[in-house]
Structure formats: C-alpha cells, structure tokens
Length: 48
Image 1 (cartoon, rainbow, N blue to C red):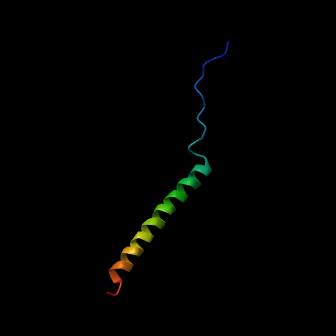
Image 2 (image 1 turned 45 degrees about the horizontal axis):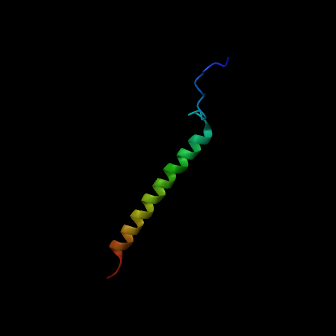
Image 3 (image 1 turned 90 degrees about the vertical axis):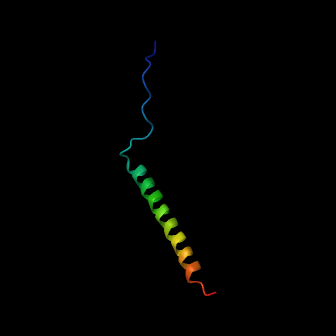
C-alpha cells in the first residue's frame, strides 16, 4: 500500500533562479516607469 504524503513544492524560494527572475521583473517595472516618465516629459516640453 502506498503512503499518502504531501507533494514537495516544485520550487524552493531560496533558489537563485527565482531571485534572478524577481530581479528582472523589478528592473522591467523600473524601466517601464522610466519610459512613461520620459514620454510625459517629452509631451510637456514639446514645442507647440
């Protein structure tokens, strides 16, 4: 008869791959915010 154990989690939260993915996501968000700020600055400074 087999035992009914809880399955192990697929990913360990301390794995470096997950930290790298989280760092990439944070950098992507910062880049997006910088791009939006640059677009707003361009629109504000655009000669009309």
